[in-house]
Amino acid sequence: MKLTGRVGPGKVTKWPKPLVTRDYLSVSLRYDRGKLVQRSIVHKRFRKRRLIKRIVGRFLAKVYQGKRLVDVVPFNFPLLAPAENFTRTGHRIARRMEAKLRTATRLKVPWNLSVTSIEITDVGTARRWALDLRPLHARPRPRPRPAPRTRPRP
Image (tube, rainbow, N blue to C red; front, side, top):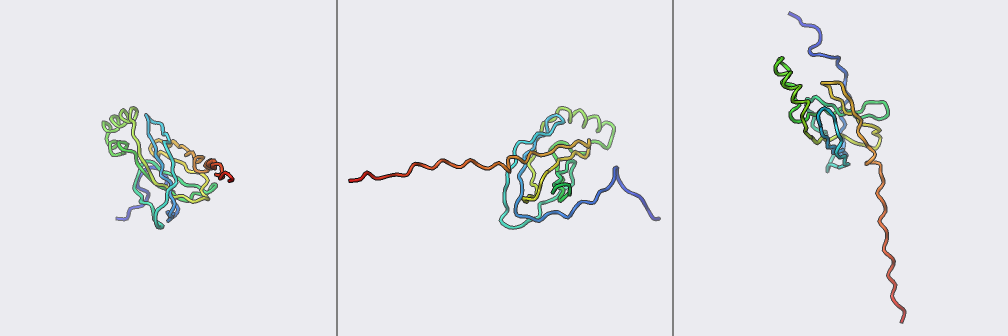
């Protein structure tokens, strides 16, 4: 017996090949009662080029160069797993829990200077948030130089 068709809801989109890079962003996110809050974003570097681990997740971090999708990093927040939604009772419990839930996670997102934007998508609700990349482009203030020491002339 031959089976045809798609398994699961929604349409399937082809993801780009994952980036292998030394540079990455460590992004700290908080899920606060249905809203996503960016707590921090820090540029970091591995010792050598690596592929960032991928998991199956409800949320997607989409990395763009202009309008071109460069990479997709799936991730989850603790206690927001879709497993409870398989029964009506589980769906009701998950909905009530999600309405009051406050949780946080940290994820690693591949980074290079050509990346222009990163968008977080909640696959469960189709909501989207853009990450604020301005802290990465801010230049640190130069430190004031101390006055030169001069020796008194004899």
